Length: 254
Image (cartoon, rainbow, N blue to C red):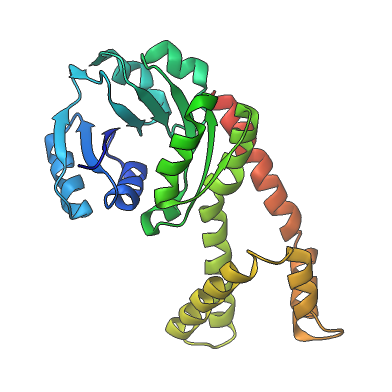
């Protein structure tokens, strides 16, 4: 029999994680709205155990906390018991805050990203070191993991890998729009953009970004002209600032 994971919360992040974990684990989902729990099960395409939040007993359970950070006080007041392990995906919510609100034998902060849905999440983890192997194995079910030694590092990782899909989505949309502006059909532009991202995903695993750039950019060529336009628009600084602002927001939330 597979191990049971208990999700508290049934929003978009919970669904993304559950999509990646459903093949390896039995899932239990706890929420306040029975209709939303039914919809969660329908979207997941597997049978789950559904339970109301109020009075739910977490004793001995492996809990994945997926509520909005602002809701932790109200949510925790409805729970009872002591979990075996509490995994939190709440951005900017410190281990100390989790310990204050929810009783558990062990605490792990985790920051997966949207690619959990397709088993390609980049998940950062920190917390009780004795749970490192178990936590890494659990989240390896949905992609790649990185264990860091401090909450500061996890908040920085949140700004990079957690928020990163939104940044890359902006790049993808803008590139396709640029091709359409020059006269390419929208469907063709989207096909090219998707193929570009798929191929680049493989290249970046084994090559430094600067070396990839240099291998494409021939003297006086098309790539050099386009790259010059990006530098003129301060795109590089824009992305650096995006990570900085996201990290600042994470620290403010905590």
